[in-house]
Length: 168
Image (cartoon, rainbow, N blue to C red; front, side):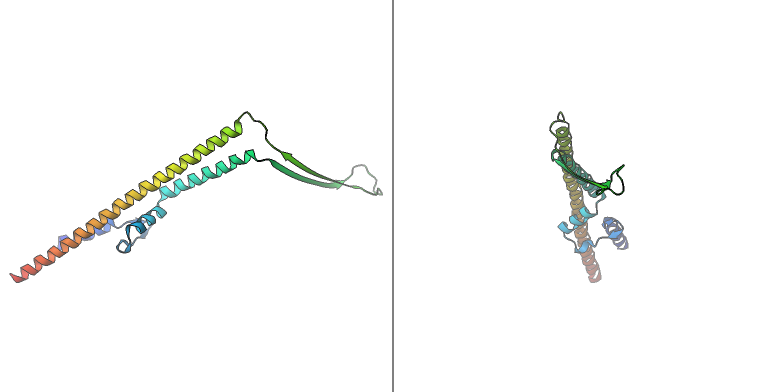
């Protein structure tokens, strides 16, 4: 009887997951909540999410090459060589410049295409990693639920046997 209790206690400690040092109260969790919690805590998923965010930011940067650039500059200064008693010793200049890339032999498009492919790849890898972690979490949760049912069944059986032993 004592070894059954020790085995059940050992199993409950082994199967109780610990993520980042915080124990998860499995008794009160349903499968969806458990999977969501594991996905939020998974370092693999977080790492892949950062890689996807980096690829998305790179794609946005590459997309800006197609936009025209507008530059505004202003200068204010003193004229060289002008006498101090000159009516206008200061100079001022205002410039507005508009640049647009007309042709670069396909370089900008190739860079954008590479960034787009990288972003798609990272998105697929993120989805794959999330699926792998979720599947693993579901398997662990269901295994834990199965062990709990078996433990409860063993306790009921033990109780029945003890009651029968008292009768005899």
